[in-house]
Length: 54
Image 1 (cartoon, rainbow, N blue to C red):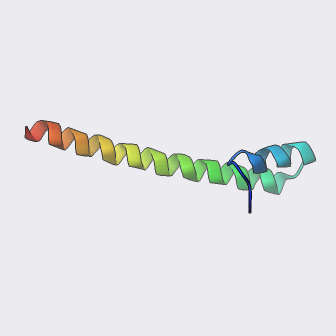
Image 2: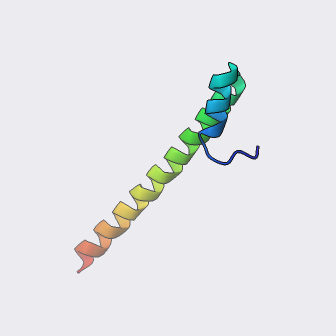
């Protein structure tokens, strides 16, 4: 796609009334949020296991 940030497609879509860009940007942001959430979830479990092991 070539966007410099995740919000770029959303802003372009809003300024040009292009729903496809808005949906595409929203899906990318949602996917990034899910990935980060899972990473923090795993990190929390890892820290919890190592704290209880001591």
